[in-house]
Length: 127
Image (cartoon, rainbow, N blue to C red):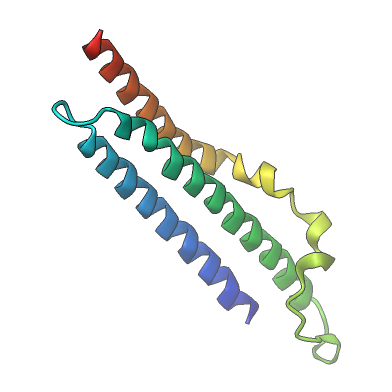
């Protein structure tokens, strides 16, 4: 059961990354030369929201991995089938730290950086 939850969290994280790229790209297209430039500013919302959600899912995945590791070391008679992660909460870095982990910073930071670059290019084209 715990492994199923871990797989779901990893799948959610993968889907969030895909949606982040798709939505930001679509907002770039909508802000093309002839149309409304404010769509570039709007691109920050999904980029940052998906970064936050991805951090949450990664944090949950780490909690369940710790729980899985704890349960795996127990005797079968001691296992109570509890899915409560509060027993391992102190063994995992806080959600904010996980959100700004190296892997998430690289992926989502690149997206936010691309938005900033496109925004600067559009501002320079206008001026």
